[in-house]
Length: 117
Image (cartoon, rainbow, N blue to C red; front, side):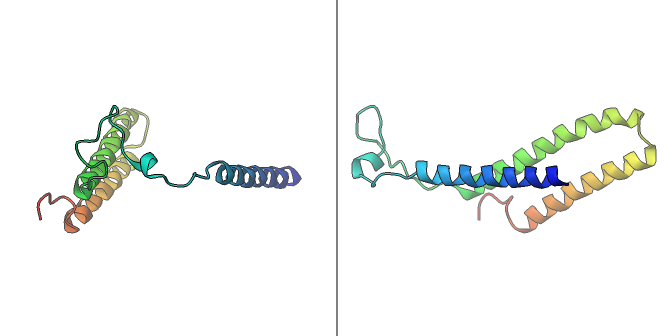
């Protein structure tokens, strides 16, 4: 019990020290107009470096990554079918796919998948 408490206190102390050190080190200097301007090989930039980013594109990219990872998770599940109980295996797969379908339906209802509005 004492070892656990000491470990927790040590982890908390190290975390606090690291956070304090990061805030002290990461202080930025005063913002200078030249430092804030974009740099393109010594020439003036052709377009603004701070162009607006499409949130719709970002959301679709995140959805793609989520479903890509889900497929990578599902592939080993097929290999485990030999070693697990059939009823348990089917319930696990069905729950996993049901959660994915509910998430997709939720995104569709919120209009995330509609590119043009």
